[in-house]
Image: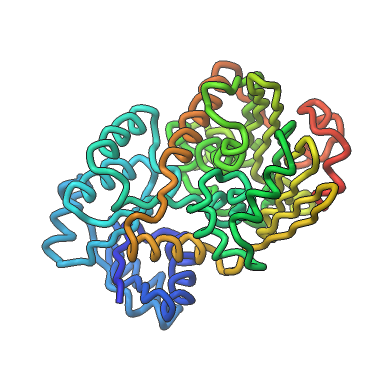
Length: 404
């Protein structure tokens, strides 16, 4: 039995972590036994009590929120040394660094760092300690978009591990053959439009809306960079040719009334171009009308196209002499990521996609910095339905029918 300690008892822990580990319990002997939070144990227990299975989770209060305070609590209470860090992003690097240096196995929520300085700091830690005891979560690259991540992954050994979580079962040789036949990438378009009745509810969390936390760009747009970057190559070869940031007017007014502060952006658009001419257009927005809720990525190659449906976690690849469709085996949210984490616990040499996620995070910071140099506009939910806006961003009419 592998017991897990989770740091941070937020909504993702309650609604996703517990459900995911529950379905993995028998196969991987993975079990969340303890959770640490700054709030009182009685409050956390009350939030968990509606699920009888969750009553087995022991709750511990973290009074000293420093890295050393966390280490002291884990040691004094003899908590499991396999730890998932699911706190506000600013705590990820200091907590992960401290736990790694105390020889614990550490899994970190995305994004793993809150600032460029933290990325540099963690880079030094990784060079010193390595990645054998580190696993990074990434909800799109390692789950909702895993079929496409496999298509982009040049490491066949890693690809075969990921392919074990896709259906139908195929060998990495087939993926490499399909990728070779597709030829050079020519264009990438990707969209995450999240309706007010779905994922956007989570993003009224005050720490997400705080400008210092990176807003929509760091919280969700980062997923699109993680998905596109493996197809584009080295970040040094990618130019950021256009960025737009905006905030949802109603949410901005609510946030100002609640906190007295301006809100961070809830919409991010970027136009990227590689030195060899691959064009990429990415847009991510919260609080759109539920009828416009859609999440997909379309990749045009020399000899075919690949379409990723993030809603259904599927990849369809179309070419002259092949037609491939892959989908995620586990439908429960976070189950695939946690299964990969469980495999990492069993075999420390299994992949941790640190380099890709680090480079994607650096590019995300660059995009946001460029966007902040111009004024942040405001939008109403209905604005995103206007055809002229899609034309303004450069999304042509060919892709839209595929998204449906």
